[in-house]
Image (cartoon, rainbow, N blue to C red; front, side, top):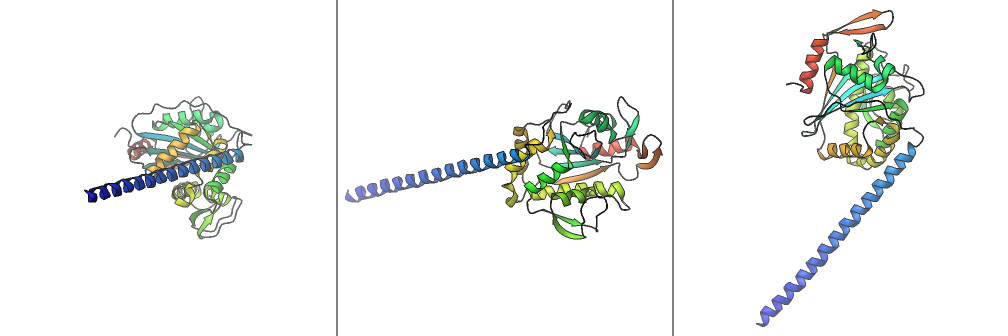
Length: 316
């Protein structure tokens, strides 16, 4: 009997001790959550203040209906932030599979000669100049029959600032040759970490035998490197500040909540793979020249449309 009483008292003391330890662990977890939330909010606000002088504006945009698990983002890079009308220097569609977390990136050559709805035939990058995001989206819709659900427009200065926020120690790039012509920086051949200005210069370089095709390939290489950089544990802490700054630096139809949710979804899915494609594909284009448009790239539209649909899994 006495042994049972001693055992009972020991069990009660053990349960109390375990309860106190459990309560302490819960308290620690709550403090960590509160601390992380406070830090994230503080960094987000710092990012907002950094982009405070960048006026936010909404552009005309009618998104296509989203069905299934694929979301397509139209990414546009321009050399001006609305001070004057600008042609689109970079035109990409990033296709994200929310279920598999895989991404497919399609770059469109800016000199593609095409009919722009409501206008004559011009280079593809003229569509943005004539009618902004919506006209460029409509042009791509009619050429290739691909749905576009969201857009993001960024000028070069904003790109530099955002890179320095998300990757303050630079982005690792294997620079394939010495580069300096018309890019504002001098880059040497070899693996190195590039800051925002240097990375932009690398992505814009086109004064070699490859011309714009080489430039597009480098842009895709930059996107791949950025994806790797963002996923590094040492840089995840910079995401709240980055998202805050993006509110002013990036023109988009998405709200801050949607942007944050998208980033978290990508991170939660682990490191996403990125498949890349350039339109036009090899063997489906030729060069031409027109008095009103200058040097252009003529393409076999049906061949490129077929290749693009197979790559994105449209209608398959």
